[in-house]
Length: 119
Image (cartoon, rainbow, N blue to C red; front, top):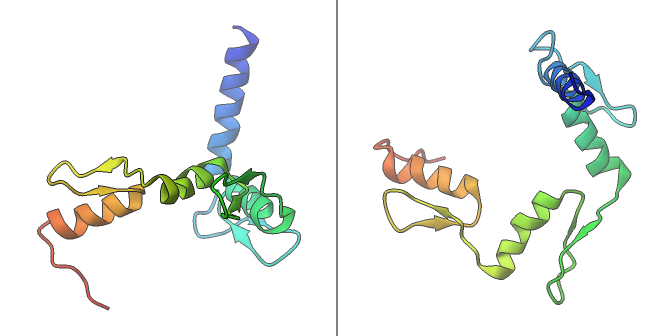
């Protein structure tokens, strides 16, 4: 086996452990800086980066926009506000959405045949 395949297997195994809590009802990863708890180590790490590290290296380049994020994917989603890109297309009609959740919501309410819940 190459070291790459061993490392990939080790990474997959450790990632599987991080994603599968021993007791699904118990949040066993606790933040040392606040009362936040998580089921998954990766969620705790993201919380610590977002809330406590305060680092937001991904900055919007649009004029007069001060948006910054700790995550590249969040910046990419944000930039669709400026570009008006709507890459998520409905397979049933002409609807397009800038974010995946918008298309998911559209499909659920417009094409599932179920009435929309009112709050």
